[in-house]
Amino acid sequence: MAQEVSSGVDFIRAKILDDNASGRYGGKVHTRFPPEPNGYLHLGHAKSICLNFGVAEQFNGMCNLRFDDTNPAKEDTEYVDSIREDVRWLGGDWQNREYYASDYFEQLYAYAEQLIKMGKAYVDDLSTDEIREYRGTLTQAGQESPYRNRGVEENLDLFRRMRAGEFPDEARVLRAKIDMAASNLIMRDPVLYRIRHTAHHRTGDAWCIYPLYDYTHCLSDSLEGVTHSLCTLEFANNRELYGWVLDALNVYHPQQIEFARLNVTNTVLSKRKLIQLVESGHVSGWDDPRMPTLCGLRRRGVPPEALREFCARVGLARVNSTVEYAMLEFCIREYLNKRASRLMAVLDPVKVVIENYPEDAVEVFDMPLHPENPAFGSRNVPFSRKLYIDRDDFRLEPPKKFHRLSPGAEVRLRYAYLVTCREAVLDESGNVRELRCVYDPQSRGGQSPDGRKVRGTIHWVSAGHAVPAVVRLYGHLFAVENPEDVPEGRTFLDNLSPDSLRLAQALLEPALAESAKTGECVQFERLGYFCKDRDSTQGLAVFNRTATLRDTWAKLEKKGE
Ligand code: ATP
Ligand code: MG
Image (tube, rainbow, N blue to C red):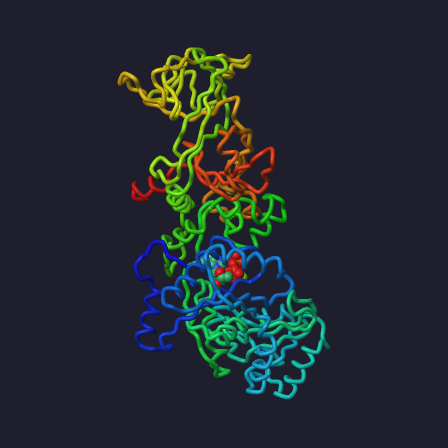
């Protein structure tokens, strides 16, 4: 996976360089991206994907895709399929190394029997609540379960009967026998297996006991020969258990390294929360273009290259922080600026009549598809007496420095002519219904014939040729920077922005309507980047706004904020 910027050597790459120099893994670098298939991937996962696949590629290593599918109740093949698609889209290539923790169930079970035989695991009959009560607190040692000192034979027998389905859910668990007084609470005899009479999306009814994350994850890493197991900071406390399991079983020991989670302003990055947005109908689905999911971003028109650049710029840290959403938009703009064709669209049309232009005449202007890159070629744009411009480009009473159209003012119609507004015709409620203008026939191509200054240039479409389209204008899904910061009794859903989606009945120049392909991003001149949506029909195109042209990020950076 190509890394768009090299941000120097971060602490993880520094560690790998060290390990390679010392020969710790014989110069081998093997990572994995380990999603749980219980939802769609989001921006946070993009960071992990770019890191794991990026590191592997950089050091001529390998990166596995491993589904961490140990919780049958929440997982589904729909999620597996979406994850494969999203990782591939972002540029992650796991070749033939697509693994599932569930493929290791038999092996994990054998390891568990081994732990029991070594006296390092026992079957506990305490209930979930009792186990919690017995665990103690940060300041108080835990209490040993009365079942802790069962003999090996009894434990083996009970564990085999757990597997055989003799006991109901929650009746018993298998626990590691470590230390109920450990200062790290995770080490106080953690649960390794629990009973769940629930079918699994891959193993069906083969199992009614399922291994827990901490037990499964380290052993999966070990079985796959992973060298550097990269995970987020909240697993720092689990590292001790990760090591304990591998050491107890005396198997190959990868090293776990933690890095900071990605947080982004005005959105939430947690599958549990995203699923709530989908299920409550606040968004149209996982791929609603307002969602921070990879499929949502893709549908919005965000190119994978821009996302990779974003992840590279975010970099790696050992402390959690929040990144401005504007930085993602900056990366999107930077990428699309060089690659998107320019066309004209009017989002809020106001009619313009060029009074001195012949009634039935039509001129066709040849306009470049990219102002700086002739390789894009050009398109034909028809011009006629009746046009539309954007309502926002006209002011009845213009403020100072308003260089667009107003009564008596002259502007350039992009690549066409200079026009002067003679009169604004208003409707009963005072809204502009039509602008009566005159054009300068000497200004063909938008050139000033006598050197007079015309400051403003506005976009337009020809009324008789324009094609209607629906344009979805997206804003932040959440109105506040940190949607999860809520007072008692309220939830992140209370922070949803009421106008994260506005619909515009737009008019497009004909070339735009004809040529854009679904999923393709173009620039509507002066308005932003827009991506043709799959909801488009033969008669009516639908475009999603990918990003505006306003660069709030560059401004923030300049101010040194
Ligand atoms: P969520 O909180 O959204 O459920 P998760 O961590 O439970 O996320 P997993 O499917 O277990 O989701 O994550 C797969 C990998 O992606 C893990 O290695 C995890 O650390 C990483 N990951 C998840 N969210 C982020 C994030 N916000 N920033 C960086 N990495 C992340
Ligand atoms: Mg998880």
